[in-house]
Each structure stands twice: as C-alpha cells, then as structure tokens.
Length: 238
Image 1 (cartoon, rainbow, N blue to C red):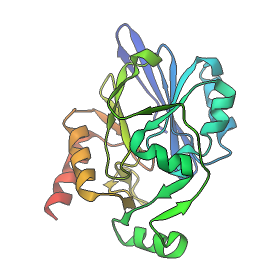
Image 2: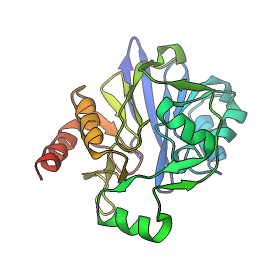
Image 3: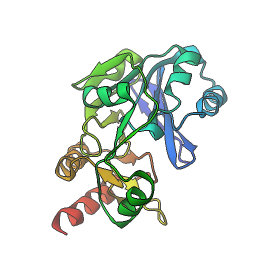
Image 4: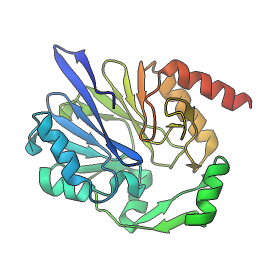
C-alpha cells in the first residue's frame, strides 16, 4: 500500500491506506485525524491497530466520514465511533438509506457487474445493517475544523450521496467514483454499479478539473489524474 505524506501550512498531511479485504479505509492525519470509510463489520480493531502504529490516539480522531452508504464502507463505523468518540458523517442523499439499512446498488456498468447482480443481489436494493450518523451534510465541508487541510465535495453517480475528499498537496480520495481493474489494479474502470452514469462522468470531470496529483480509490489504484482523465475521455467517446 502506498502511504503518502505531503507538506502543507508548515505541517504535514499523511494519508495511510488500510487494505480490508476487497476494500480500503484511509487514515488522514493532520493536526487531528479523519478516518475515511471503515470496511465491513469486524474491521474496527485492525483500523485501531493502524492508528496505534502511527502514534495516533483514539481520542485524536475528529471525524469518521463515509464516502457513500454501502455496507463495505460503513460496516465498522459504529464500532470505531464507540472506540474513538468521533462523530460519523455522510451526505444527505445517502443518509436516509443508511438509516433504513438499505443498500441501493443501481445499474451494472459491465459484464462483471451484471454477473454479480444476477448471482448475489438480483434487485436494485438489499437490506443490510442500519447505521445512525451524527452529521448529515448537503454542501461542501471544510475539513479544517476537524484538523485536516482539505474539503469534502459531492461527487454523485455511484450513489446519489457519494462524496470525495480533496486534500492539500494534490491528493483526492474518491471512494467508488472510480476503481481499479481486477487484474491490473492501477488501470481505472467504472465502479461495478452506478445510480446515474451521466452524473458519474460529471463527478469524475469535477475531480479531474481540480488537478489532483494522486487519486486514491477504495478498490484498486491509486491513479494519477492524467491516467484518470484519459480513461474518462475514452469512456465518453466509446
């Protein structure tokens, strides 16, 4: 996994990816620490171990933010809240689904997504663990108040409430806005499912136009903005 430290405002912002099976969580350490996504249930102790290995106390975690409302991203959020005391945040468009424990999958973007849906899901929605969040937002969020230099932007398309973090030093964490291939992790692909492919493309453009040097995704990656932009250009003209 690629750990990255970038200078900002006479300080250092450190991004620590944590591989949790098929998905990743991220520790973003600045003056305080933000946890981005938490994997499936049962990963709380592993994330806490990474905090400890990087000299981060549980009480130094100021926020647990979810890039969207799918169980592989929020499964351990409640456990981490209990251990750290940090509030859980999600975009308003996914908050009601999360409260009801509904995972909205949407439309497959390719053959593998269609196979997964036909074998394991079969419907656009499935019921999973519900989660009560503490912060619901519907506009950009300045992360400085949580001790991290950056902001949260709305990047819908995978789900209506999907978000990305745009951090100082040219770093983006985009959840499932884009993902790596199953054979070649650094080759960008669409996510397996989308709520709206046109919104997804617009959200990808939105991130790329902010000129990040590196884009961290929850599945595969990371990618440079050049590689992501080339993928998007080909996808739109395909």
